[in-house]
Amino acid sequence: MNRSKALLVVLLVAVLSQVACSGPKTQCTVNCVQNGSATVSATLAAVPFTPPPGTNILSFAVTLNGIFLTPANGGSNVNIPLNATTYVVDLTKLQSDSAFLGQVLASVPAATYNKITVGVSAVVVTYCTQTSPGTAGCTAGTVAQVTQAASIPATSSFSLTLASNQKTGVQIQFNFANAITTQLQVVSKVDLNAANVLTASALAPTPTTSSLATGQLDFVEDVTGVVTAATSTSVTVRTATHGSITATANSSTFFSPNCTSFSLPTTIGCAKVNQIASIDVTLGADGTFTLLDYDPLDASATDWIEGVVTSVPSSSTQFQIVANDLFQPTSGSLVGANLALGSPVTVNLGTSAAFGVDSKGLLVPAEATTFSGSNDTSVLRPGQTVAVRVSTFTAAAGAALASATVNFVGLRFTRVSGSVFAVGAPANVSIQSLPPFFGGTTTAEIAQLNTAAAPSSAPTNYDGVSDGTGLTVGDTISIRALYFGPNSAMPFTCAKVRKH
Image (cartoon, rainbow, N blue to C red; front, top):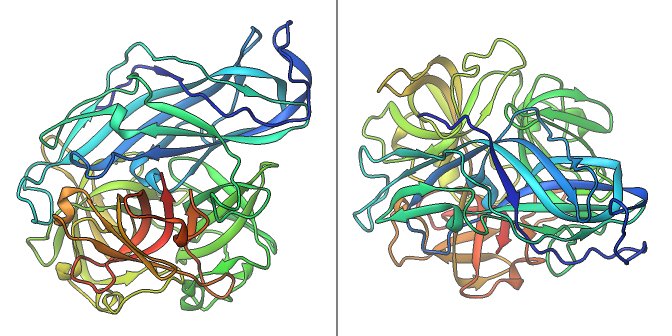
């Protein structure tokens, strides 16, 4: 489970659409700096393999340590401070979602910039094989990792012109197919310095390319961690691996049914300091965040490990996940720094361990009740993402995997990419060509699209199209969805759909 510790500087290669502005459009001649300053925010996303994928990527964890804008004709680099000193994220989650990287408010010199540099200090890809078509789960003993050593970064053209007082954003995208080499489902190489691994685009959504409201640049989703501040208008959530976000509620903010479960109001009063909670927010052009929904997971901060179920459990009390997120208390963590994202974990059910579904106000099939009523592993399916509340934890040692005894197993949101087989919008969409360990061959799975409107219930959010009716057969899409397994009448319930 070694990680590369050498600094890998990845020079972002992208051709952006020229960002419209009212400032000077002629190229500057002295340090490429015009008068005044702009506001720039940066988000991170991922481009999946073209379906069907070559293998099962269970985790693609990267550790970032810097982002810089370089002026076209000289001058000093502009640092965009990351949202955390050491920023760790699993790119498999960003096939459908966006993560907030950082921002510079009103102090980026107006100029033309031709390069973004991203510092990457560790890269780990965790994968498995499934060579029996139609069989669900990773083949026993095939979960493995590949890391990247430092190499010479790739470069190409990039252009972004900023005017005085302009407020804008840039989304950086990691391309799986260009970074990862596979052979017969085995990952043979990962290389962030290969051509066109990183691209970028200006954040300029329109009513036909997103369900975002006017003035919003991007969705930033499933920000999960400890509530460190809560007021009558806003909440701050601190994640374990990529910093904090403070978001302001409004009349459209949706509050999860979990608020009622914790005997709290379905208002901003549901947010309490020291809860474990998940929030979805939108990033505004001015750099502020608006709270779309609030979803408390635990009344007090404890250790949770979230990860993807790798195989059909062979025991009623034990199963395996690959970790793609951690939720940790501010102090006294049982896990601490002893579990890296992408690591396999053996999960043992404690006595009277409970199960639940984090429906987040979405429409769910009857299998949700079956899952919540369970007390053993029989309801678990390969490809599901679960969050487990840890009561004891043992770090990995030698060949022995990390292990955790847990008292709660919650079904949360799987990220998966596929090809559109049929469109039944606004109610649903069918997808096929999922990763092999989902167990399908030519079968298409139905994904529920939620047409409800906040604040009464939670809608499905869209990126790349305004709603489900914009999808067409053959489109590559990524979804963030509750997954109930292939035998469900509605296998997926979508919180997010991104068309690539």
